[in-house]
Length: 462
Ligand code: FAD
Ligand code: SF4
Image (cartoon, rainbow, N blue to C red; front, side, top):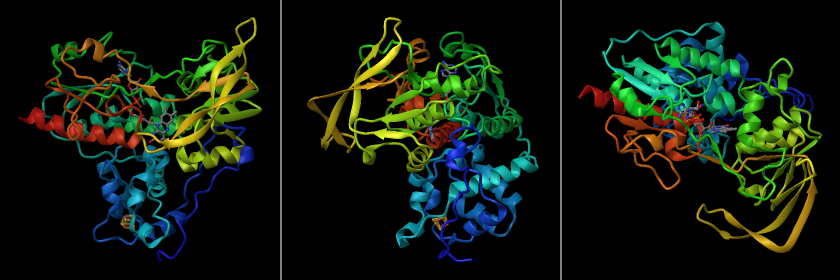
């Protein structure tokens, strides 16, 4: 097989069919497809792809095993570095991580589909039953983890593998963080997330839900309970609002509430699930990131006749992954650019009926390097609408930082932690993921969890 062969496309559900269901959009490689794609890898002597992976997956190593049809060996290789490969293979922004470093790009060829191969191996292993690594020798020490998102799960898994007694305390009634409550079923099936959480538990990690760190359980309580180190991975779950007049009208949601009702509380399955969503026929989602794409595509599946992305810059500045934008377009999501609401209007029952929008043009680049949206004077448009979902970002909540003396935070409320170790200003307290960086990605959160686990091991081994 040679790398002259084009990158193997991912089979997917037909857009017209999938916009009416919550089943997974991307269907995964067959064995033949995986072998063909793996055959394109050059096994570079100094593989750059590995440097692009925050959890240090031995990419040429596991792809090499696929080439040999040793899927079992590929799974072992993958799992030695990444405890959540089925998740990463589905939602990692590979195009800006490992795949962005692939040497084939330099030759103006498409990079190896590392994520698709990772997903293939993880699914293959799940279908056959996951093999556990050998039980480590106990270190006789206890570590507590606050938050069961990708950062917390990774830190906990790596610490358990190193022989620590680890317990995760999670505020929601299920572990998984954004993987469970944010990213929709059609992109990341919850049964897959559950299986990877079960793997972490099988490593020996204990998980207790319905515990609110910083409120029902303080960081200082944990040390009194005998934990010798604490990892905080509580994410960025606090939704930002626009502070426009009318934002409290019925029919205006934060993306967090909208997606949590749909994913975690299974509103799409109402009345079999007990939490419905009041859905209109014409939906506007404000924002241009992955969260906005997820909300707009969810709205269509919940029965909206029209679902619009309203974004104040242009498509070129949208932060969402290209594949997500493409999928949204294929499913019929509309895009209204250089536009943003300044007021929401409702009827006498305080129910949303329309929004007044300001039109913009692009000016000079701002600090982020993207061209700044500049309002066009007097260009105001009123758009009839019955549901608005605000997806303009989210930040850290202050529950833990407000009740943990000596824990330094940034002006945005994020915990200050060393990039290489996760060490905070409090001895024995480490942090990583969105609570440190602000809203970022699954793999960056996992990378931070991995580094912190290593640093906690060093700290407790002193
Ligand atoms: P989280 O996943 O937020 O997990 C934090 C956990 O801590 C949660 O379970 C929370 O309930 C719990 N918690 C919070 N406060 C407390 C407390 N006080 N006590 C105890 N527990 C607490 N990234 C990608 O790479 N690809 C994508 O496609 C993608 N899509 C996304 C779509 C949506 C809708 C959203 C919202 C985000 C998306 N992201 C995506 C971003 C990614 O999910 C996050 O960057 C990642 O989940 C951060 O991991 P984390 O572990 O730091 O935090
Ligand atoms: Fe294979 Fe690309 Fe990594 Fe080279 S850089 S080893 S071609 S995945």
